[in-house]
Length: 262
Length: 349
Image (cartoon, rainbow over all chains, first blue to last red; front, side, top):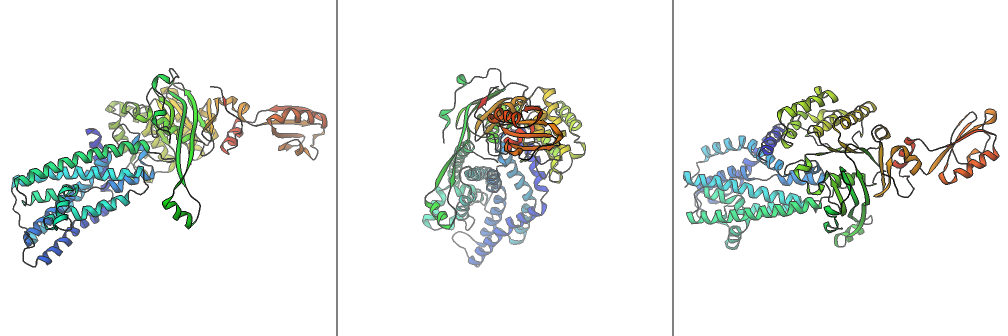
């Protein structure tokens, strides 16, 4: 399986390199979107604090967000769903390796190539806008680990939603709902600490925080030790649930697969 | 849909020593359907109706190691669905299927390493990369040693004249060039069973002939079992001594290609040589006139009617010579592809 992942990484990297312009546009989008949220919050703050966030905290949050988001995003709804719908997944189902290995490699290559633009972009913006971090090397180490877990969780949820295409022709409609919830509850629209009461509590229970916001919160040093421990427990729990969901949806879906004439 | 409970157990499946065993295999789909128009589309929002499609409806056969079997039938007959069940892509609704002793739908890696499926209408290669990159993937996935990979690839390069194609992006290959690369990728690991679904589809006559030759050579050298569907009769007549004919998911014929015409064609050809070197008008009353060449008349008549027509011809016309023949195999296959096979099930493995 490791050998398969390695060869697919080479392959998907080469494929993505063939579309350099697309990647440049994607990377610019990955940078500009958080900048817009940042600009809105900095304007709202107007030099004062919003909740516990100063202007420097907002800059630190959204720059970290930009970086983490680059490494946790899922593209499976666009790739795997298409393959199922078009029937082109048939060829991969006949290969002697798990059919999810290639999407995983594709996911990693996508992130790797995009990071060539996003990482320098984050450092440049950090130099220009003076973020205020309360972090330490230990927090950064934990944040890296948490980012890996968040990336796996997003991958599992993404490929599970894509696998709904085995039942319904347009799984991307389900993904729309997922992305809307991700937008509100993963800390994209606003840091979760700023969400009002019930929404705030829901965000801590639902999986979306652990797909993106949690590593950002750890990296920026805004959580206590016990909050981090609880967060990791919740993240591992959701990861186990994501794995079970993927196993169930994929196995049932492949069994149901019926590409007549495809 | 009939579920797995209806699938036969190992102990119930016969075909000892066969590469492929199929017993009473069925694939039944539920396909949504509705009337045309806006109202019907609104109604379908709340009330869906489904139609049961019996794509494969209780077929049985077995294929011995090294056999090349042509799988024939008109479009929609169930050929591709059967091949997909044999390769493990589709889950049967009921019945039993074993390939090399495996249940294909389990898609065990040990099974997948011993079979291949080539679909003429679907590329398995990566469009944005040269074929050589895809061959490297297969080297890893099928666990080929460097030596085995090099030997197999060198053979394929020579047999299929792949040298100039290896480094070209797949998207820039012609259809024939792409199919050569597809076959090479599919055979690099020397599979024991080949499922070939229209492997010469859309190719020009020369390329069809090369691919056909290659498949025949591979079968001879490796002793691989081949199941082939093709709409090109030349593929079938060149490669297959045995054919299986299905239509509407049911098996119509299983036996030697040579006997296909005799068993399945619903008509006979009557060739008459007439005295005086001419054919009198009105000969179409005996049957469908296939050709008139001087005093030579060829008629196509229903199989059952052949004795009566023969008697009438002998009685009513100045016959010098008369022969009754089965139609040539090409026209029988063409007749099947047009959806004209009419006889009831005949099995003669």
